[in-house]
Image (cartoon, rainbow, N blue to C red; front, side, top):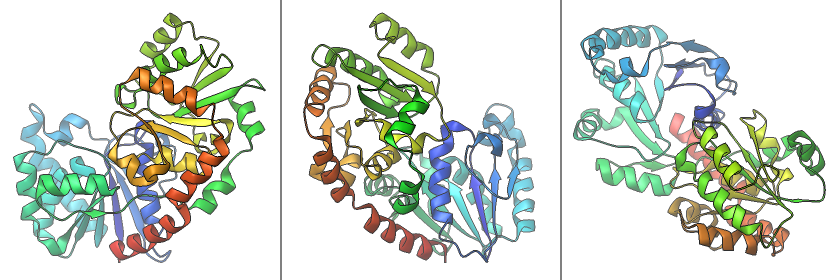
Length: 363
């Protein structure tokens, strides 16, 4: 058997998606050849080791068949079909809806090929998507979502069974790579003797960092020694920097940008905040908990799925509630909360279940 891992795009914004596919493919026998197609972007921009990669360099407009590119879509799909046949792949691991729309129509002439589509987050499904997924024989197609919450939603939308494969990391390997508190703080340029609220994610509206800044500014009245670090990059950087200036937080908030070793830095933080408005899973929660750092997150079903009653939650877009939660968090034993959240997440057992399910999925 050979596996072809087909990804929509590379670059820092897609790093978490690549991590999920890497975790799934880590369960493949070393004797099974795995190749990756990157439809957009470059492998060097993906910040993860993607192995044997073919870069297609196709624009989003071409892949989606927008405007006059619609006329060239049959030609593009013919190229993909020929390349698929030459690859000799028996199984395709497809990155979400966009890749599925491009690749699934090609399987009609390739009954020997099986496809696994991995949904990473909420997506807009239309009537043609439902037709597409129902046209592929069930023996050729498996749909997977990275959380139970997302699997239930996609299954309802498509009226097709969707397997929940909650993506997790190998906790032993993850902890081995962590930097100590002093090392991580030195790399981030943080002063000693301060308490730090950390956040990690793309600087985009859906991550809720604007709300976090407002809540943090209010919390400084009770906790003036606090610092906030938001690790990530994105289109909202200028807006967030302007907000920091308007709130007078220039010496209290750090925006170090995208860091390829961000997963090693969690112990620099006393708490981690995840103010997202929506998430398919939220790998940041898992990483923080495995690092022994307690998490304060938005009140989302996908977060409750992972931490249940051990989680600390605040309503999305409620600045007052987030302010109260931050103040309460830094007046509580972080060690006790972290221990309870670790027990709820149960990373070792979750990794075992994930590994078994991924091996079955790819067999």
